[in-house]
Structure formats: C-alpha cells, structure tokens
Image (cartoon, rainbow, N blue to C red; front, side, top):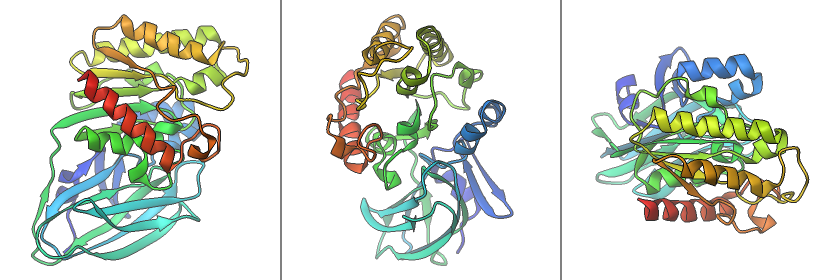
Length: 325
C-alpha cells in the first residue's frame, strides 16, 4: 500500500511544509516567507533552500518490506545525494548516487518480522520529491512523535557539506541526540542574515543552535560583521524568548591566519561570546575545538568536515548542550 499525504506528513520531521503535487510529495524546510526572501536576494541561496537537509521520516510499522521512489534535483554545489534508510537503528539501504544529485531513484528493502522503527533521512545536497512510499498491504503505521522541537541555523557546514551520507551530518546527529523534530536552516555560503527572522515559525522551539561566522569573516567588513551578528542574535532572542539558544562559534579552518577586512578569525568568536553574554536565553559554545585540526577530517582538507569530522562535531556539540541543559 502506498502511504497518503496525511500519513507522510504525520511521520515527517524537519519540514515547515509538506505538499502533494503532480510529481509526488515535496518537503520544505523553510517557510514560504523565508523562501521568498531568498528568492529576492540570491538565486543561489534560493536554489539551496529547496534542499531537503534535515528532513526525515520516522514511524513504527509491522510491514516486512518498504518500497520507495524519489526524484532528486540538485540543490547545492555537490554532485552526490542519498537517502539513508534505517530499521531499529540498523542501516538497511541507501537510495541515491555518488555520481549525481539529479534523477529518479527507487528501491525495495526488507524490514524483517515484527514491529520496527523506520527512519529515512533525506539528502542535504538535493531536493527530494517522494514519488511514493509503500508498505505491505494491511500493514500498520504509527508516526514517532519527538518531544522536543528545534531550529538549526547555519551555513554550508550546517546544511551538510561535506557529509557523504545525510544521517552523518552534524545537524542530523544532533537532532537525534536531543530527540528533536529539527528544522535545518543551513544554506551553503550564508552569513548572519537578520531578515530570516522577520516572523516566527509555526511552533515554539525548545532549542536553537546558530553556527554562522566563518563566511562573515571571509566576506564582510568588521562593521558589517558586528552589525549583522548582533542584530541576528538580538532578534532571535526576542522572537523566541522561551527557547534555549546556543551560539556556536566557528570551527577550525585551515586559512584562519589570513588577514581579512573583518579582522582576525578569532575575533568572530569573541563577538559571538560577547553578544551571547548580553542575552538571558543565549549560551555561547566555543566551536574551535569541536573538530580536531586535522585536514584528514575535512573533505576539502581545509573547511568542510567529512563524515568522520562530523562525528566529532556532533558528539562534542551534543555533549556541551546536554551539559548546559
């Protein structure tokens, strides 16, 4: 049996909207208002806003098989994309390709006997439209409802660059660790962008993480950096006064000692920490040592963690957040 829009929507985490269209089910991690803002300021960011980073399905079923087919459309600068499929925490399949982030992909996967929890992580590097998701005829399905809600703001590293598999990105691992329905707002190349906070989401988040700064250092003046950084955190704090907000300073990058108009790389962390100290619901978390300064942990050997680097990032960041909570 093919799942309906209602069943798909009820089992979805990480989406502001789920729609059924001619090609299939579409998942949007940004609100319509946020996407319209990106459409007006950057064609590149607008394209990336359609990537299904952080979107996942999670449900309990007694079906013995799972079938799915998805249409992928490239929504990043990377040429690979996968769905990761788990049953009771065990990887049972990956749907996608190392060679392309576009095309139609389908497969059937054995789930085994009895009840099991199924998790399907959607690609961060592409927009996935689900043509269908099918279980055995007569099988039961119950969505897994996570107790916490979360927003994850950031740049390319938050979107997922350069995890090969979506379940290995730090944002996905962090959401699982905090048992949160988390909307990933990461956009490759993004900086502190206060206009993204013009209006609230349709839920009250329990936790928020913010991990901008490295692109601000590389591409803004000192005055622009400080203005946008402070404006973003003050808006965020006022918009979600009940949320615990964690301001993550930038992780290591290989060219950290280059001279930029924004000043020293370390100055970004200082500004974030000083701004967090002004706001009652914001806690700064130093990011510089979250990923060891080892080029082999970075896909490009300088900036974007690979799967192994993200494992360090997620483990250490989740530990710091749990300690703060």
